[in-house]
Image (tube, rainbow, N blue to C red; front, top):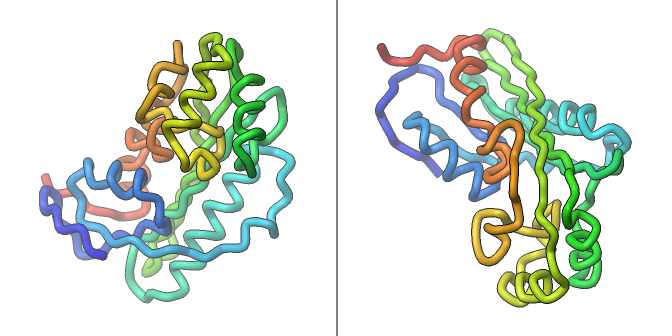
Length: 205
């Protein structure tokens, strides 16, 4: 699918190696024409021990997987993961697991990491960056958590067990240190223009 917003012009097309609607929508805010293409990377091949290393490796694998299908493009791979008390937060497999996740996060701080790997296929210039945000949750009552899970039947698709963009969960975060876009959309937009410039993307001046 091609996004044709022509506020900037460039010869090299940009491909996001993602199928995330949040990332697709957020990237469109930059006013850059782009395409999206899923990478189909097997994430189980990367050890899930260190969150920063995990997002580094997976963002790189996703970008490289898509880059193999093209001869001239700039490919952006991204991966995000939450971490609480040194433990990676996997996607909850059930309503009960999601409830317990939110109970544990209630009133405490956890981290959210996003890795970004960009490759210019024609020049083989690459850029890698990891953005970390700290999320401080307010105290949540059991009834609030249950109401949220009643409101959002897709709770099990989110790595942290909640969606901070909508429903009652929009009130869960009391403070955020770091990138706002990183947490809410899984794509820290503020770092992308400089990273794209470093790999040779020419913004219209």
